[in-house]
Length: 137
Image 1 (cartoon, one colour):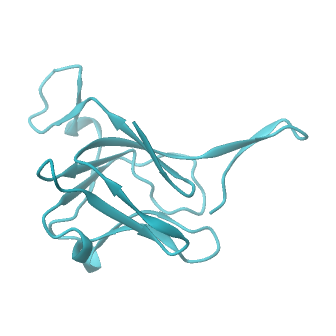
Image 2 (image 1 turned 90 degrees about the horizontal axis):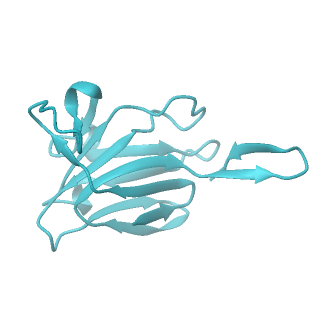
Image 3 (image 1 turned 180 degrees about the horizontal axis):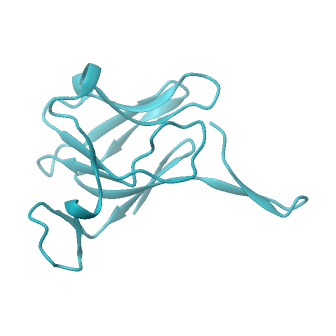
């Protein structure tokens, strides 16, 4: 399942985060990625996934919108300029009926069900120049 908010794409993974560094190949091992943020004690009450290139806007989980949800982020995507430290994975930990809400000033809030998501920045292909580039949000 894919979820998109502007230029940020969340791809639901069937893998679980393995917290004890087990050798299960179907899990994402913490030893493999740096744990970047945990939203049960976030900095400034928020967990930002990506920053706007020129607007100062951001794709952000706010603790006030997600009181019973824990957001963990792992690793960072390489080669993403101007978007801040975009995490490789976002883990949404909550009861099945709870969703994590991520907001951006120019988009509707996006609700993500519990699970592990690969994060990607959407790319577009320019047929005239024959190049791909990140979508600018």
